[in-house]
Length: 245
Image (cartoon, rainbow, N blue to C red; front, side, top):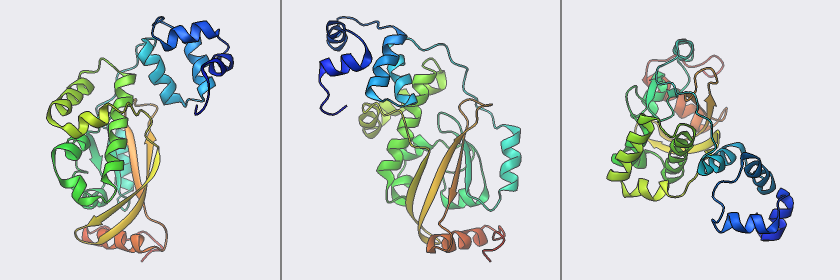
């Protein structure tokens, strides 16, 4: 916390000043989970950052493996949501499924694509999005969070190692240790067919299928972006939603 002295933090966490000093200086490298939780509360850390703290200390339990297959229920949902740009992706940002409007919105929203490879190894993301650096940083934070949650997952390790070896940009972002991408955000893009759009995206975890994320995009009702999105729907042959025709 800004301006918080060592002694004040120790007091907030309920530990001795001497013990906190030993932790800070690396003279005690195995604090208990209870001590870590106390420090997290004192620092007002959120859940993903607290998990990262436990991961650094080697205290996380063995997690359930992340899913890599498209859940049948989500496949059916995307069939119903044919007029909504929606994407199902894995914890390593592999696209499992996407609605036609999502694929029309961005070429890398297609089954089999990997969003991190698209971000760092092709020019597509940076050509399309005005705020590409922010979006890419959030994608890296998603992978970092999964690496903390499943540190032995070979898919996570392989993608991380590939991008570390092939992309200086990824290496720089990986060293930031960001682990908590926001579930809701805004993105601005210039589409080659319908022009500028500003969209809100929301990321939903699927508790029954660990590691699966559903990402849904929407435009402000009545806005130029909504009208541009409707033109994109028409271009894909998707009927405009009721009330927006």
